[in-house]
Image 1 (cartoon, rainbow, N blue to C red):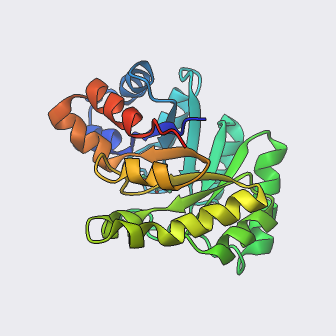
Image 2 (tube, helix red, strand yellow; image 1 turned 90 degrees about the vertical axis):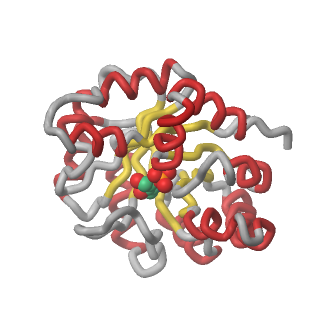
Length: 242
Ligand code: PXP
């Protein structure tokens, strides 16, 4: 089964917001990503709405024909209400704090076990698939399983950062985490700093990688290569024969 590509469109919203108008048109870009082959759209609304606005999420929902993945911090009531109202295919729980530039760590699924059990149950009761953003740490994978989550999203920043120095070493903890996840029968997503350079090796090495969500590098590549071509190139990196 091929790994799905979900395009994170936060950067499109950042560009739009920088001028206050509707250029680029976020909804149109999302629909074009789908038309160009993306199998999902990811958004990460934050309380300050500095990129994706809550209204964007509401506008997108009825128009998308692929998987809608909403990421964010479930300790924000506004986020939980939005997700429960929109009912996307998937919610990804990310423990980010207010002023954070971007997500920079996964959930501590052991320390916050009881809290996560409640949140996961709430989203699942609405028929929403649940995923927990975690570091590639076996204990955190076991902890995620204990919450009842359907999937984990592996935080791939360290892999991406170390890829060019020593890719075999960079992938090690991710392979171990993925093996544990497969053993426990919890699905595997991944994201953060994945790129045309490092994606293929990651997909080759991680057994049963269900989905990657990619924003920053993909949108940056699209400036040079065009969005359609870029999405096709990313999809090609994910075509692996295990
Ligand atoms: N996954 C999560 C949980 C994220 O917060 C982000 C960034 O918003 C991504 C994936 C995508 O990361 P990138 O923009 O580096 O591709």
